[in-house]
Figure 1 (cartoon, rainbow, N blue to C red):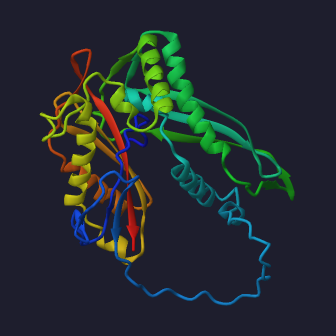
Figure 2: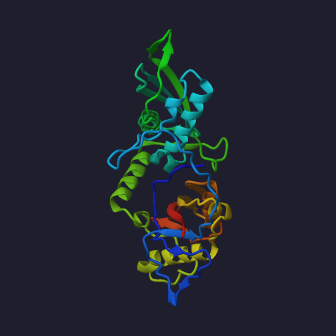
Length: 330
């Protein structure tokens, strides 16, 4: 699954109740609220009461240290330690923005040391890039550095760990952890060609998007994608029309996952997809707190109709699109 797509196009979200229509209390729901929020009704489930313990009670001005599972694990227990590292990677994973833009994959081997005090140090990595041919050294270095920086940051954020003990003495221990950056919707064996000019153009686009913020993606193409029903709208109003049509599409098709409601699961799901040169929506990827919510968000977007593609200098281009959908229980 492609993890992140920086070319963000945030749709102003709207609030929905589980059985609400677009109209509420006789008034039309505002379609320009700040957030796409899907709400459902909480279902009460029995929870086991925690047993009383002899733990020291904390005063109002005191707080407990966040639980660190690594302190309950022996570093020499490969199964325990590796499982915790894998979970840490999943929780802190992010796809390099430039690599994501070019659909580049990689295997990154991260080398590091856990010293005698249980602190991670000397983090370094090496990226093996997949499915890309570079026309110059500089472009390869930029992409490799992006992957290596992303992987290093994950390992550098590891919490304190019980050090390795040898003959009763704490010692430094070296590790190597592979991190795979894979895009599930990229065909196996596909190859793209990258050069420094393409890199510069991509970096310029990403930097401009950061500065411009909301809807900056639309401003970076000459002709924005056109949602069905917005063809006859004035050019200056096409973006606004796109937003409204997208919101109405979500309102029409959403449903709160039953299991998520039952267990009180809620949260924000980021959805990324591509509006292709043929107008079809492809490469739908989601990231959120729960698979049920992710699957529902993906289902909603998969039902989008064919969209008139965006254009740059008169040529049809792919337009990356991203939006958050918040599932909230009432």
